[in-house]
Length: 195
Image (tube, rainbow, N blue to C red; front, side, top):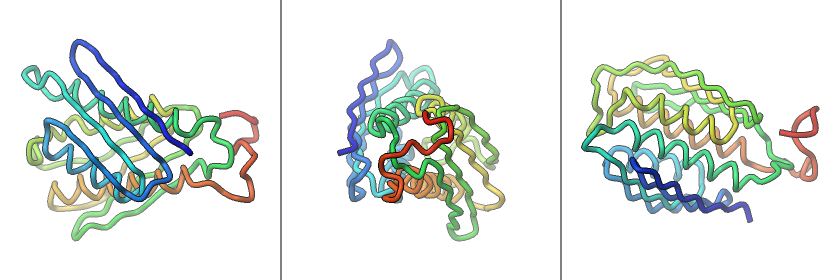
C-alpha cells in the first residue's frame, strides 16, 4: 500500500497529512482557511487519493507560512508514499476546463524540483485565500516531492473558477504521474536507473 503520514511542527505552523495514493477520493481537511480547504478537497477528489490534513498557522502574521507549509507537507507525503517509485508513470498532465476558465498542469516526478507558474488573478483574495501565495504552495510541493511542476492559466474570467481549475488539473496530473504502468512494475522510470 502506498501510504504516508507526515507531521511538520514549527514555531509558525503545525501541519499533518495522512495520504493513501491508491484511494477513492475520500478527504478530511481541516484548515483555518476555507478556500484552501475547498481546494485541497477538490485536488483529492480529482486525483482519487485519500487525504486527511490538519493545517494550522500564524495567520495573525499573514497566510504565507501556512500555505507554503501545506504545500511542503503534501509534497513530503507523496514522496514518502511513492517510495522507490518503481513502475510509476512518473509524468502526467491535465488540461482542465471549468466554465470560462482553462488550467494546464504538468508534473514530472523526476527527482529534480522545479516550478514554472504562470497564473494571474484579478483580485488579491479569492474567498479568504491570498492568491499571491499559490505559487509558494506549488513551490513547496515541487521542492519536497522532487518534481518538475508546471502550472499555466491561459484564460479565465472568474478567479474562483481559475483557482479551482488549477487544483482539479493538479489532482488529475498527479493521479496519472503516480499511477503504475503494469508493464514496468519492477522498473525505475528513468534511463539513469534512479529518481
